[in-house]
Length: 167
Image (tube, rainbow, N blue to C red):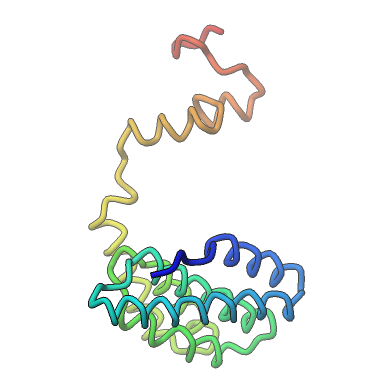
């Protein structure tokens, strides 16, 4: 198998182009991604190997970019048709796809299906522990953010070096 192109960079470039209203550029990157993934799927299938989930997720992310392009043009039904096949095949860890589809369904008035997807996604988030009040996780995020708490950041205080309020 040949080395795959840098799909992540192409996804980010497609997202940036789309946000900048450069839909031609975004479509060009998304087409490159789609073609590269199709080729890789064939190569993996020939070698009787499953395509790595990380590569598949990059393809899903490309479809999300296309769906978000539809959002900007208020073409919600087209976005729904792009996302529905993905949502049927995703793992619980990919709840972001379900939430995005739920948002489009809500926008077109299908509140029952949207509500079911929102609840399912929230259940996945809870089951996976992604909202767990783990103090270590919260502290590491705060350290990365460069402050010990939202209050001291908002009040313009320096971050205490010893964690007890003194710099």
